[in-house]
Amino acid sequence: MKTLVTGAAGFIGYHTATRLLDRGDEVVGIDIVNDYYSVALKNARLERLKAYKGFTFHKLDLSDRAAYDDTRRAIEGVTRTIHLAAQAGVRHSIEHPFDYVDANLVAHMTILELCRHQPNFHHLVYASSSSVYGGNTKLPFAIEDRVDSPVSLYAATKRANEHMSYSYAHLYGLPQTGLRFFTVYGPWGRPDMALYIFADAITNGRPIEVFNHGDMKRDFTYVDDIVTGVVAAHDNAPDTDPGPAHRVYNIGNHQSEPLMRMISVLEDCLGKKAETIMKPMQMGDVKESFADIEAIRRDLGFEPMTSIDIGVPKFVEWFKEYNGLS
Image (tube, rainbow, N blue to C red; front, side):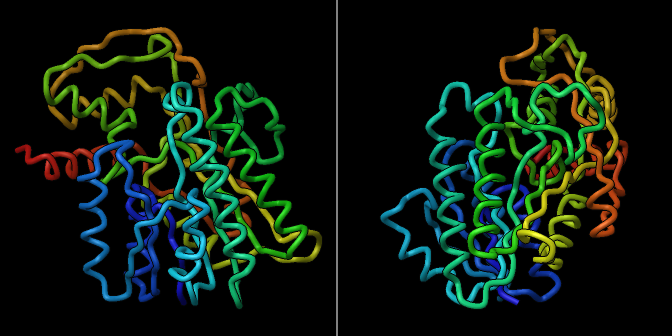
């Protein structure tokens, strides 16, 4: 089995590629390796992947239409794709909107075209986001809920990806599964996300900024659980009957934790209290997220196993080792 993993140098992409390689699959990785966050971290992930005989890597920009033929040649023989490459971050989208048009819309279009023209292609799994639920107040968020009021450009691009994918499933019979990720964390995690930012600040004696005065809740989902769901989706293409072979799932921990409790667990792991600066809600952010995972549990047997009391210590263990801390 030969699978394309886009965003292979990224957080979830790295862990997903590793899981596939560990079970003997062949993986083709694509990533632009941009400087949105530490290139050194991305390269460190890639070096670990390159140690596998079944892994090949191509540094390509999926939004570069002039490089389309190079990308097509790079993925020759691929029968499945896990498309995780994207410009992430709600807050970044406020200041750099065109990054999201290129990386999230144009690149998704590229993947759709590449997959539909690939001989013997079987299944495309792509990353959506819990951000599509916008300011919805009904909890937990369910896939049946309306998602037509995004509160950030990032969310709007992810919802647009779902519409684009549905149209390709309808027009060309391209089997696809979209996964709405809920606040993924864990070892090799992104430095722009709260857990890493807080750990770095607390360790180095800097205050942390806590938005909405700490009145926030998130469905924190450990990366190993996420990857289990991604691979289960990868292995089980949707049926074409009835209707287009396109489905969307929430993939989360099904547990909405107060932000301040996560900070408390992190403080315990680091053995150091945080100095907090309480701030108002940031533009484009939401107060709470909570995943209804009944659909993915029913169809794919997905069952998250890792609470923050287990996952945060695992993150801290990696954080200390990666940063050379005792």
